[in-house]
Image (tube, rainbow, N blue to C red; front, top):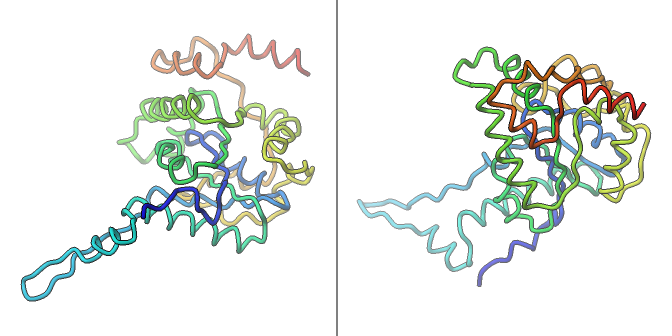
Length: 266
């Protein structure tokens, strides 16, 4: 009998979907500061796989594992889903909290798989100006010459656009999180059905694990423990032609127009 995807130990985890260098480590640290929300470092679920081995003896090979899975009505893909769900449950149980947030930037590249694993998952879409994503990628991975920051940014913009067009969720911007943190986090708490806690903004008071390369941001900015204002948006004439469409798609105007909007809101 085929297993359903709805039978999960963590039936409705929360996924932060974003491009890298968009402030997702800051957002997960803020959320992890809530008394009911556990948001650990990047778990890289899409890199955790199940392998089926063949039994071999006397020059004979048999796929006994495959026969066993077929009898259970399971595929390797579904077995991986059970592994992912068990890992989230393990982390949530250890935390003593009741809301689980998974923040891994590569998640947006496999959002269809996540949606198949957790039909009731909830999503937070975190946007940042594409030019500043590319700039931050270039600085963070200066030793990785094979990475083209603009091309990498566009890959994530495309995946984000597909996910946002298909999945229901709550959208926030890095610039709002850093310039208007209370208003932004209050709105996110309403979406997640938890009470707003002012201490969330003082995330440095809490232990969020190590800030090290490979499982999130490792910069001095995130290590400071305080939300710091984002850099000014780039001037329109400095935006590379390759990123202009992405900027328009994500609703980022030229800097002069944004400065005017910010002044009107202050």
